[in-house]
Length: 246
Image 1 (cartoon, rainbow, N blue to C red):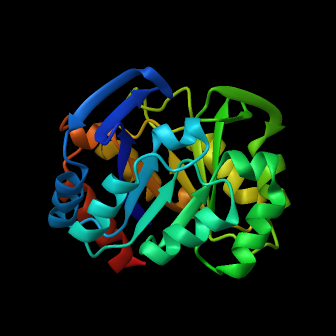
Image 2: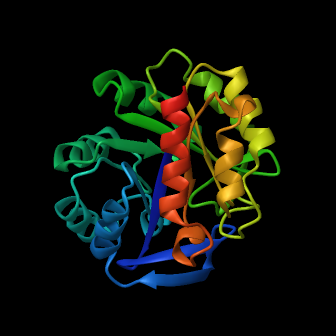
Image 3: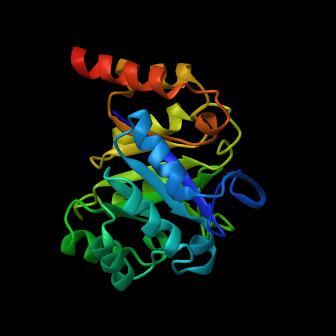
């Protein structure tokens, strides 16, 4: 189980949104590269980054900030937001991104995901963000009529590295992960699933390590780290102990 600290980028700054609403953004750090370095120093092993402006615009909008983070840390970085064509996928992977996350295009252009996963094995993930069970697109501004399971099953044999499942209703609100829905998804597909949205405390990390959640590949944590509700040392110690006991 990997715990991914999240950096969401808006206008070059590190922010957190509430329920995906760009109007409800809190700036936590004006220097995303410094924030990335801080997470590395705390002992995290994999960074999760989202270009929020890019998700709305449909193209990368915070490239300078992302490149600065890549220069600041040696740990792998997965990036989503505004990745809608193979050229953008290749550009980011060439620049040093370990894994790209395709969200909106996974709903609207599944062939892109399949082509990208075939061309870059193990380096393409799919981001599925659900509101009331239906997948949202365009930076969560629009809700589709398909479920996360419907989309995930499209890519069962495509070589996708992971599905990142976010419950939008909980994201940024510190209400706890929607583990029931996330585990239910993980049990019905063979692709590794990463939980996202609402991780609030050490209790959530403990729940992620329970036997019934063992199919989950990891979880993303954002606001709880920024406002001090989650002690990174305690969380990472729990994960290390679980790995040692496995």
